Length: 554
Image 1 (cartoon, rainbow, N blue to C red):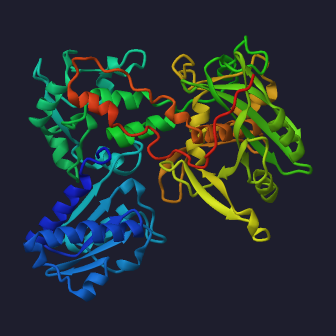
Image 2: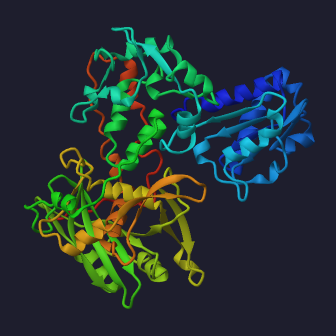
């Protein structure tokens, strides 16, 4: 169990080469997709063989065999590389060793079970007469699935530990041992959980290099566990300054972003919050001073979300939202209009006073689940400079993607050109939007929402209709998802979601990227950590907007 990009796959490749050199046998290597399997076979595995003379003598890499990229015959066995969900390569093929690359992301094999169940079945024939091995690794998701669950329930739980420079007690580093005051990355401090003394980056790096893996179980209990399990935290990385991690943590303003931080960056399983959106929680977000359409002084741009109802003429629920420089959402106006002409008139006439300026809607996200052709036609038209983007929730989009852009073309009117439409991961965007109603979402720190003082009962009912429930997906994995009771309406809530999607496309997740000024006595590594850090959104920024922010006019 590990963070992303710390060399886990490189360790697996080295182990694979060692086994074929010392104790070869039929081996299965599972990748997330067939495309990833081909890339692994050509770019990484064959490169290792060409670099190691002892392996070149083991593998039969003639021209014909080279073209069959996913099957590698060798003396004493063979290696089959396959993507998850594709059983054709290994049907009826027993295996001595099985490798599961990023186990949490592997799909279920139709009629055969999960990749781990297949690994168990394929090694049964060899386990009665020789040594076998199942090797699994990846970054964790939740404590109840994948590598995190196997590590907890079936392994001897070896953690990378090091001695505290002050009390010399063993430390298992966790993010919970980091203290940050008022979400200011410059105040981040790593403290020993035993003596509470501060440990600097230099001391932590030196102690990490002298550390070792230690089981967290009693000796008798550890011996009874079936697997040897290893866990490494990002805090064990000997070249990662704490302030760089603190910047990424403080940039998280939703539960979805926190999940990415703990799973991918820290390598720790994340327990999702199980809060319920209540009328009281929504009431707390009302601002008694917010009585009109006026936008806050620090508004960066205004977006609009539109939810479409299946009726004639089209019933359109809309929510106009102002986005502040620290990432707060301020609801300026919401309501219903009948027909596309009325929505066009709203876009053309909408004005929000902001100090001595007047802001207009910069972009709008429109649901195309119903009346798809009408939505496409509306989005192809000009609406006084408002960028309109069709979008809808799609089951095929994963959490780590967030969004997926597709292009559609009208076969009857090719002269219109292609239109970009956005497919959304429902759970990811519902987490983001509803996370703003959480009691711990502070408007002073960003990532919250501000509602008008006169919020209607209908709006409140639409927002609190969503409830988080635990379901089991088709792969047998347990997960939390947002659902509503049959007959309940959530149109204003969906409009809020679409408004946030286009706000991200306009740069909402990049508003927090002002780099804090590092103290003068910080070393060069810390300064470079600020300059070279990657965008918080981890590649999920929407690229569909090429226009500008809402223009201000006097």
